[in-house]
Image (cartoon, rainbow, N blue to C red; front, side, top):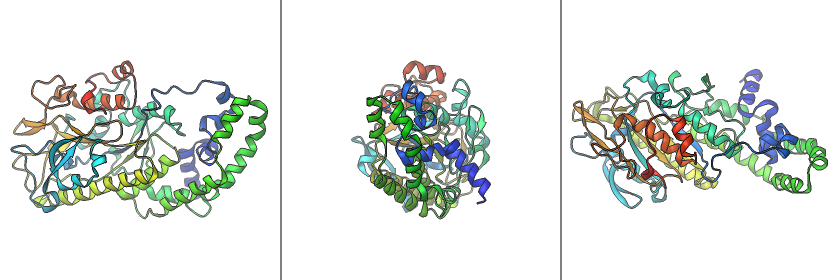
Length: 436
């Protein structure tokens, strides 16, 4: 990676003057380093609920993967499931309730399953390039914005991240790229992140030096311009040399493990960015079978469902090891799902009526939201009861409003007030049955 490209990427990740790195090195909030006197004197940025705020790792795909074919809630009469041993029907429990699912989902630890929610939604499109529209909840967000960016705007003040813009690590097509206030955001593959941060002259190798440099520069201002209470506050935030050394080694070790741009490497890169508090929302791409029109015996679907769930299992283990299991939520949202009927034996077609999303995190109660029923010669998402989350004909949330309701419920899960949710997402309802 050439120097100019590296500098541009550094500025994208950490802001002017590498404020984000200085915040990591010192323990001081980025807002304080940007304008110390104003930060000490002014009010903090508006945060809906610091206690409920979560970092978000979102897997999204414009391929329309068949993840919707093998999750709890799809094991009903008429839905075709492959006989591949990798996806053997297996019983599992979600918050004490029993469901059938493909075997890989049962490999999630029970503590994780109890905060895993499977959503049966309708995206109302069978077209790959409509991925940006689906990420915009099909026009339900007002003013026009992508759902990941809307989440990030609410979460950044609560989490104290360097930037509110989301970061995309794993886009495999232009339609998977994110926007923020209508502007396209750069895509940063894991190998580019490693080349920027972990090279011998990279910023992480000099983190301790950056800490001392920054604190020395700010010392006079802090000590002469702050009240005793403010001085104690600043001292309580300042990171010690030994703490910085541990941070540096942990981050460098994680980045050294990146050898490609695979889903597992995207997870490692995402966890690194979260530990550095760069952004509240990170988009990745975990393959779950892809655009499998001609998938003989659904072999690719089986293989990638197994490997995709394994990536999620690995993510959960790493979150636990880092002590982040209560601070990070994983979720998925794809452009559409695949057909489910009896003809889906050697491949599946586009399904505008059904897509399965997943949320795994502290704010969510394990279970199944919605369900599937016959429609147009195949299967689609059922209407949903807002209180229980059950899918049933005639329920209050129509199938076409399930996508917007997913967005509203997620905003509620991270602590956004009801009036703000209703203003920002025009249709749908909060599904209280999905919330912990």
